[in-house]
Image (cartoon, rainbow, N blue to C red; front, side, top):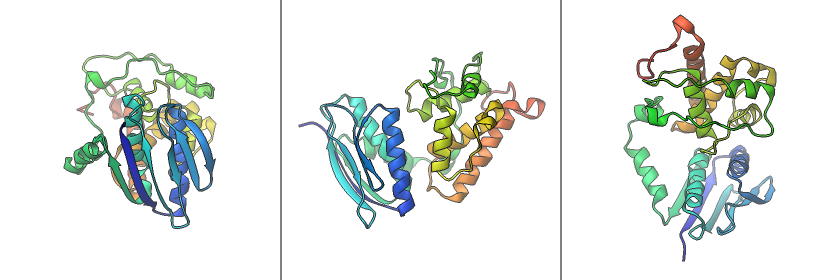
Length: 261
């Protein structure tokens, strides 16, 4: 029979519908899913040849529903589908997921049982968390991307709060573990989509500015809570704190362990 995911919900606003569709499109491209159809009110994607299509078709009341069978595709495809719903959930006024694998419920239980501080604080990094693999640069990379992502990692023990450690972890997370770097064009698109002010490309030739903007988006995606202006301001503050930490020299966190910083 294969595993199925049934879903239904209502977007928070017409603007939320646009945000959902844009995020689904970006996520599909990041994971090499086929986009079967797209317009201003819907998008239909196919995560894998052995997986049924995934439809996001909104009516005039901003509601949608559907079902997809993923059980004949590799296990990671099912997990990717569920993770997509995690990412777009903040844009819904109501979202119900019936996941036969239990993966969705397991995630909800983890979030429900974690204290707010644990969900929103920057986690302590251990050696196993450090992404030591090369993060490849996609074809749309700019010169500033090559300068930012290709610097020597110089990983040390204990793990310290320095640019390559933070940069690679965030880049890896934002591309869902694809081993591709999250470059300026994608960063600007996602920041704008989520209501952040965006600079032009020249801003990113300064590595401090680059890590600030990358950190803002990473905090937005990885922290819990509704997509409010308060959360956005906290993510901005977090981004500048990371920038000051990595580039503040004696006034920053240079060469301090992650926990101390």
